[in-house]
Image (cartoon, rainbow, N blue to C red; front, side):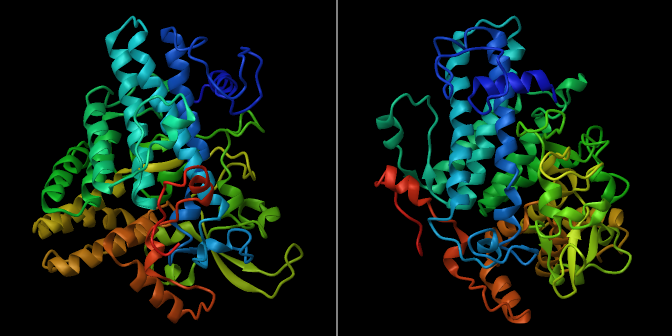
Length: 483
């Protein structure tokens, strides 16, 4: 689905970039219903445009989901920059929260717009209409899932908003209500999208496997017995779908820039450098790499450095350790005292670029599903079955299988460790620590063991603050505890 002309047109239509003169609308920032959403072609463009919005949302995803954890730190020490993330010193005025909030709700708003307009459009095939509806409901569910696990209670908007008064009438809803809506959207989406898309141009679109995987994860996050049962059932559908999914031969193969839609990738956000300068490329090289692949200009920019604590937990022979490079700081570019830094090689580009990379961002992959499935099984007392799923991931990594005689508690700890080893730098660590109830314990130990005096872990860190700007605009929005 990396169709350059379509994306460029959509960016112009949606007011996201002024890089095309294909169409002239009265407003540069809005998509007036009287001028659009009239034909099947209009709806196709609108749907693809929503996919395009995900690029902005996930380009900084690792800031909030890796750097606040024991996995990563930033090269930037100033609290005016990204240092707030690894120091846990953010507050309601931190600009990143405002941007995240706006971007996620902008995506939700566009989904709502498509869903509100689509029934008024005639389609040649009913299946196409059903697919578009399902895609929008999946993306809306994904955005609300990111919001609820980051901010807790959030406003829930499902309709097209046309006035400020309507927008400000939406207050924060209980997390149970948010999760209920997410589940409903995903259940309704599952039957409307195919398991695979035969056309190469459609690679990257939402599939039924992606819907099932996200729904299983949503069930698991709610930590209730009946939800664990639902999670195990839904995740099993993906784990056992070995026709469409499977583990790649090596961990490095998962991140191949020439095989971005491989059998392990279930849902990915697409980036491309073809139209340089219009926001379609990724900035992962800028944020992850030092001098790897000759990228010497990024020594002082790299913002997601692996911690020594992470590096030490990899055993010799673990193929995943090969995806972490060791960089010795101290050269002509950066003359500070030499020190060792650890960088992931998961996001190497070819050639490496700074802000216009080709790398996609993998949101859901098969190894993640296997470990989530194992977690659900263990919670249901099916510990032996859970260990078998974990061992599939370990075997691919080249490390010994776990004994099938481990206790449920030992298995739980093993799954937690395996998720850290397998998924590091992919935006899972901070949400995992929070949902397990391990965040404060782990980060306090990390602070003590590595003498990180500037880091101040606190119970309230488990939820991010509601951005101050949103509360100024809408004073009825309450704030999370501790902010």
